[in-house]
Image 1: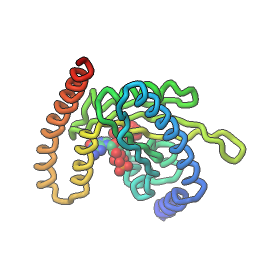
Image 2: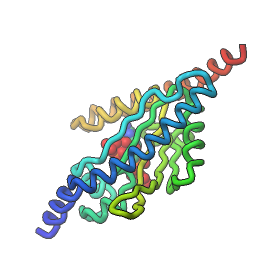
Image 3: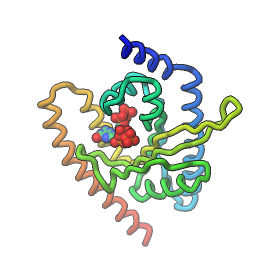
Image 4: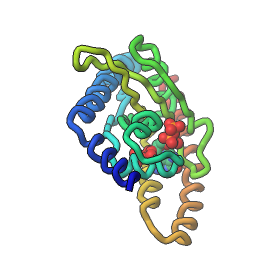
Length: 210
Ligand code: 0O2
């Protein structure tokens, strides 16, 4: 009974207008920085750097599932304190080195604090998942005061994004036997994609050297 009440509070608070506005503002603040970084890098390199930037605020149901998965009670307080990806931004670029260039420039912004960095490119997840994750803290000015909001920034190449999309789709399928089989197949493709990313970067360097 008490659990159900807490769950209902979580659902209500995560759809509360002020909560959504604050997270949206934090996302906008980081997106504005990414836009500047993209403009500067594109100018310097003479090519397109960021292919797409998408963002989302985590759905209450997804927050609830993640809290349960992590072994926390489903409460609004736990969602805000324990989940790093209530506000999330995904940056997709063409080349591997662009990911690190963007990340390094983002870290230089004085009002951004990097709380956590997870390099699933250097340390590929068991599933085959690859991306660079930054958990950043950004200040927003709200109700006459500065408030710090965490935003998860996922940086990946087009190839990594292609892979993650299929993997995500697979996760929603029910049959354990089939998904295990496809999962191991997908893992092999993650290796191929890794090679392609590295080869494309090498080729770009060769073209630039001509
Ligand atoms: P959704 O639906 O993407 O919003 P942390 O609390 O920061 O220490 P966290 O969040 O528990 O760590 O885990 P992690 O590994 O940093 O992953 C967070 C997000 O990365 C996931 O969000 C996915 O978006 C993505 N991700 C991680 N592993 C995989 C994977 O194997 N395949 C795919 N396709 N994506 C992955 P969520 O919470 O799953 O939700």
